[in-house]
Amino acid sequence: MLQERRLNNNGEQYVVGPTGTPLTLRDLPPANTSRWVIRRKAEVVAAVRGGLISVDEALTRYGLTAEEFAAWQKAIDKWGMQGLRTTRIQSYRD
Image (tube, rainbow, N blue to C red):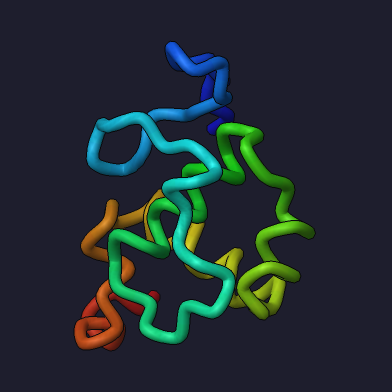
């Protein structure tokens, strides 16, 4: 599901993030993120879906595999943000 890109008062592009707030490039997790909590994963997925960054940019920036990113997208589509919980991964598997 592709989201519509918008401009804020500073002329920055943003998309609506997973919590319903605007998400700009500055709001994305740092490139050296090593602790991937639910919100950070969902922000990266929202940024890609909204066209803020490309899939390739996200993979490179965060050192993710295509399979890992696709799994995040699938989890959100199927179970919402709670599907991204790593402690509950067994409960959500097909």
